[in-house]
Amino acid sequence: MQNALYAKNKIGFVDGTLEKPETISPQYQAWMKCNSMVLSWILNTITKELQDSVAYAKIAKEIWNELLEWFTQRNASHVHELKLELATLTQQTRSVSTYFTKLKPIWDELQAHEPVLVCTCGYTCEAAKEYAKAQEMERIHQFLMGLNENFSTTRSQILSMDPLPSLNKVYAMVTKEEKQQTVAASKGPNIKAIALAIRGPSGRS
Image (cartoon, rainbow, N blue to C red):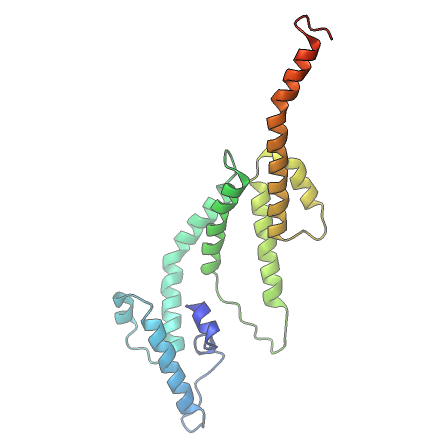
């Protein structure tokens, strides 16, 4: 719902940045029209039970705050479960691709539960950009921590980089190492067999 409001440039009606003007203001009628439209969008996305509980609300921000409080209380335990799952998820017998695919939906769902960041400093700032960067760094560490020990060298190489590469780049580096290890493992038995053949039955060359 937040994404839809952002896309339609109507997020201000629920985050408080577009306050209701005075009734004598020239913008009053236009504001009320947009407010009613946002109210309709919100009501059409929630269950009948929730609609009944917020039926009295006439201002989009009021109904939004009610729903935010309700979902925050309800989702707190679910967020805890997601973070616990994320903290305990490791690669184990999975391929790197499968392991990463297990992490991705958890990250996405946790992000969906995070509050919308709104800058109130009055200036163009880098807060949202810096937050997104910090979030990506956290995901990189989570991904690397869960890898098996045969990736310890690659993990150390990545962590020694300054600045750290992007998550996509880290994933590409690890999958490249995985392919190299797979190729080396497939050649291993053949090399051993050749060595034994050269040495002969007596163990001498």
